[in-house]
Each structure stands twice: as structure tokens, then as C-alpha cells.
Image (cartoon, rainbow, N blue to C red):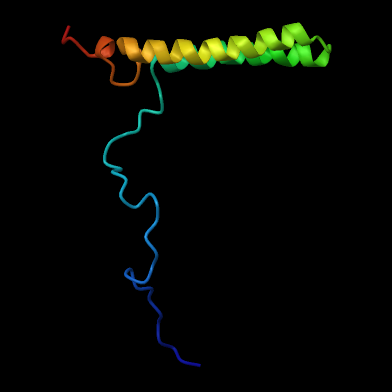
Length: 95
């Protein structure tokens, strides 16, 4: 057996989907009022739908699903209003 080291060539490796992504900026992870509102309302909807599923109540289950859709729409509307990550309402005014 040979004791020579084997090194992988970077040109032989296939180019991945995320190779062109700029990782110099922090992603923010959705830490904004819009994201928090969306998640909290959707969690309440999921709780309502889960309880309705267990007690086999279809109208309440549908209401829980509707609450989840409302949460999604509320988060989207708040993001458009400037409360998302980097939104105009969240800019530091220097005070």
C-alpha cells in the first residue's frame, strides 16, 4: 500500500445549489413583530384544530384551520406594512 496522501480536487466536485449564497450577512431568522404575530396566531389555530380533532368536531377543526390561514395573512400584511425583518417601521431613528 502506498503512503501517499489523497486530496480532493475542488474542480472535480459538483457545484451545489447553495454555493452562490452570500453568508456574510446574518439571516435574522425572522425575528420581527410580523414573524412573531404570524407564528403565535398560527400556533393558536393549530391548538384549536388539534383539540377539535381529538373530540371529533369538524366545524371547530375547520375554524382552527381558518385561524392558521388568518395568522399567515396577518404576518404577510404586517411584513408589507414595514414590520418584517429590515422593515421601515423597525429602523433605528437614532434616539
